[in-house]
Every structure is written in C-alpha cells, then in structure tokens.
Length: 249
Image (tube, rainbow, N blue to C red; front, side):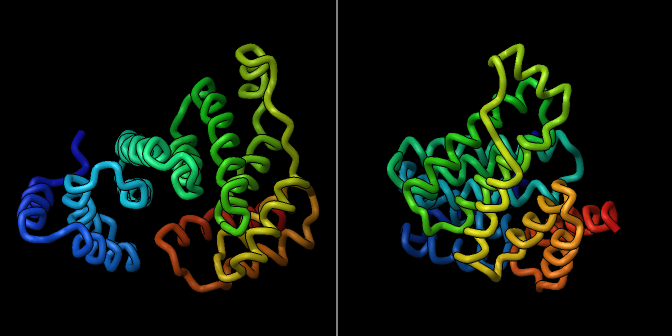
C-alpha cells in the first residue's frame, strides 16, 4: 500500500535537484507549522536523501506520517502510516541516542499505532513506550510532551483490560507498576511546562474521570474542550474529551 501519490514522488525528485538541505528544511518546517503533512513531506523526503542520518529531520518525517494517520480511510492504512512513522523514529534514535526528541518520537509513534494492534503486540508496545518515555524525560525534563507520554503510559496501564493484563501475565509474568496517581502527576508537570497545549488538560481530565473524581474531571475536560485548536490532532483529542465528559455527566 502506497501512502504517497506519484505526483508527490515526482515533485520530491524535482525539489531535491534544485534545493540544498537548509532550504528544504525551512520549506518543510513552514508546512509542518501549518499541519500540512503531505506538503511538508515534499521537502523533508528530498532532504533525507541529502542527510539520511540527520536525527532532527528523521523525527520530523516521523511526525508527518504519524499525523497523517488521522486523514487515512481505513485502519490498515492508518497502521501502515504509523509503522512508517515508527521506522523513522527508530532511525532517529540510532542516529542520536542521547537526544530527547528521537526517544519521544518512538513513544508517540508506538502510542499512535497501539489502538490498531492485537493484545500480544499491544503488551510488547506498552513496554517500549515506557522505556522510550522515561528516556525522553531523563534526557530533557523540561519537555512537556515527554511528561505527557509518560502520563499516557501510566493512564493506559492503570486501566488496561482484563484480557490484555492476563496475556501480559502469561508472556512477561506481569506488567510494570502503573497508577492513575502517577499519570496525574505527569500531566500536571506537562501543563506547568506548556499550559497552552490542550491535550495535557484533556488527558488530565480523562484520568480524573477514570479515578471517579467527577468534579475535577469535568473541570479539566471542560477547560480543555474550550481551548482553541492549535495542533493537527487537537480535534481527535477533543473527541476523546467529549466522550469522557459524556460518560461522567
């Protein structure tokens, strides 16, 4: 299955022949800032040919394929794009193992594809998300999204379904300890670092909802839902928030 259309590939070839790496990055970044993923890839992919081990670029390409998942029509298409994103993120880690963003990118990409995986692969991905998120936080404790991903790991594992938990017990002898309380701590740190990123607020509200703390859940969910969309996946985040708010109302 090919996610990129022939015209895009052709344009990449033309662009790569006429621009240097810095120009390609600048143009790609301009489109990335507008959440124009396909347009950004028209510049990032030719740039990759010039510097295939540039970790910053590889993370940016991974981001485009991860965000494109929301625009694709089928689960198979979404998973294919997510796996492509993960492959770029893993290349970034190999290129720059001591930088935060590559590890964070791995955690994000794994989180994106997890809903499309079976129980066994979900368990395997969960462990990888924890390792990547903890590494990202250690390398840069001021990165708000690193704290967010660690919070999402705790939130997910603390509320994991019985079938998946049982499978984990068979395969690994159990899952690592996780708690909603720790998830709350992580989301609060993320909000303190970047209060304008609505996904932190919504997920904090959702976590309170999972804990049965309805008043706090409603307050944070309503606050997050009232914030303006700034990122490509904000509408998807708000859908989760609305569903959680409906459950506790």
